[in-house]
Image 1 (spheres, rainbow, N blue to C red):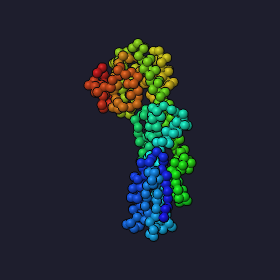
Image 2 (image 1 turned 180 degrees about the horizontal axis):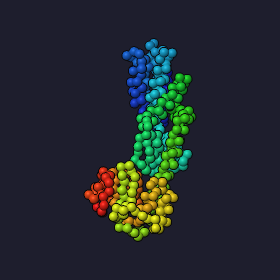
Image 3 (image 1 turned 135 degrees about the vertical axis):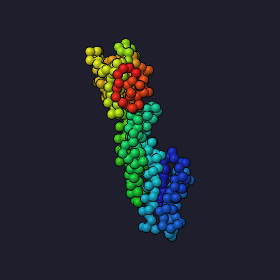
Image 4 (image 1 turned 30 degrees about the horizontal axis):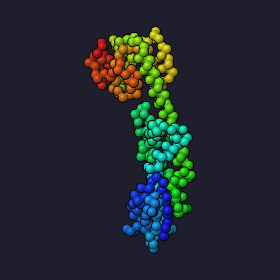
Length: 313
């Protein structure tokens, strides 16, 4: 007796046999007897799955719920794993009107990070609560619930049509993630363009100081010191560029604007966290002028943020 017919996504003609093996393996564990009470076999097209009951052992009233739950659980994983990237790219193209392959790929990467609970690339990706497995598992569970309800009332399932017209909540979640990813992409692009502008300003303005020390302690507080390890004072100097920095950047504005105003020929960075965002930004703007101190005998910072001594290292 034929129970269910599932048509896979058109592009996935190679997945029929593999999915049938997985479904049959799962059904062995769900059935009460050692022998399976239903079988999944691939159709002639390679993208159709057919579920057939084994009579007389199979009872629809007794085993039907198990068939639907098992099929929904595996097919939801298939949708999220294999079809979700296609949906994300479709949203990026059609709803946000990006057409370039490189832009779409970058936004898709950001969207995947958002869906997995991680932050975008201005900072190193950091797992948030739940992480990738939890976030993906929640999406699969929501899709599985929709599938199970549909299979309980229908004997035929076209996955492409089901995803397109029935999973509105799932689509909305992907749209929200894509919208956030696009916003982050635009902000990152603007940030990189502004960094390039600051690099140009730094390159063309004359140096006003030979050396400035950037000192970051374990608490990530930052001090700017002159070559004699005295607090840097730029109040009397031209702050036209600094005002531009203050207006545009939202990370350690005073540090960056003061450094640009000071226009040092060389910057010595003393920090226990050289990968900190503001440190990377300083290096990006000043390039060869900025170096991270490997450890100073006189200042005693480098790797352990000890108290400053006197004198230039």
